[in-house]
Image (cartoon, rainbow, N blue to C red; front, side, top):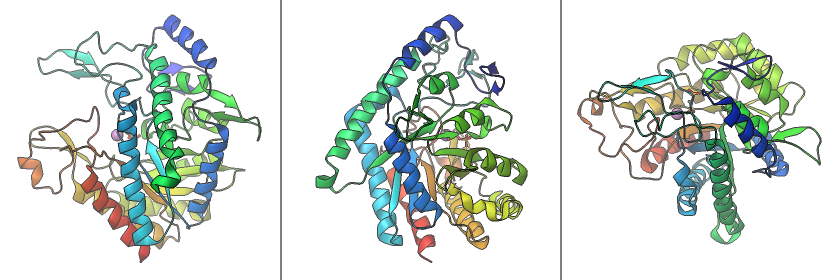
Length: 392
Ligand code: PEP
Ligand code: CO
């Protein structure tokens, strides 16, 4: 735990304080990565989603590697989001807001600060490229604050590639892609807060949409406090233990006094739990549930281990959570606004289709540095299911 204000910030790396101070000073002097106007534009698009007139596809890597800021990688990921968006537009007849976990998804909260390597040595855990290196060696795993400057540089490179893509949009027939990441490393996020000259107030210039994770959404914590200070569209992950009182307080803190579209709740309860936990939440919230955008993250509540010990996810569980999410929200008169997925255009073997594959699969191409992602074909199946549910 690290105290950066009066409130406690969970999940902060064990930085060298002198190194960190120099890095913060440098980041403060840098140009914003995204402009306030496009953050505001995304809020407007999310307001349309809150009204039930558009759908969100938010997706990308669990942990985005720095190396993926190369233009062909960024454009391939944006192209997959676009294909998925087109699918919803075609099947459900709704416009789709495309939001990447892209150009900044470089930091990970972890359930344990250490891990035991294959040879029995205990190592600090990998916390994302903005913090340390995934190589299983003690030196590589040291939290290195200078990596925050590399995170800024790689995000800038990725955004250049994306905007080059967007410049060509009309001719290529593509739609704009916004970028988002978990606002985990508060020293980094705070150093990139900039004034919004046109509208007043402040915005986080590290990405269009910033979300707070399940492990850092404490009501008295520094992450929600940070989210309340910026005018970006913000998200909060909602896991199975969140109470209606918790969520009502989050809505009050982050959406109170704002138009709909300011706050997105990203539900990640798990296929087995959502059917009981989400109705309780919605009943407790009543009409307040309609002030926000509701997305389904059917990944993070459905992580299981294969027989060989791999962290994986079963696509049938992912699909079951999407179905339950849509059914429960509909039953409460609330619009299911979209999907939040971990996915990749690469030909990987990270998620399995059915439970029986847990016993046999050996995951020859498990390439994620963190959680297992849907491949393009699996993602298409999940998105098609949601689109068909929307049409009904
Ligand atoms: C994530 O989105 O990669 C993540 C860590 O999710 P959550 O905060 O929902 O566990
Ligand atoms: Co993840």
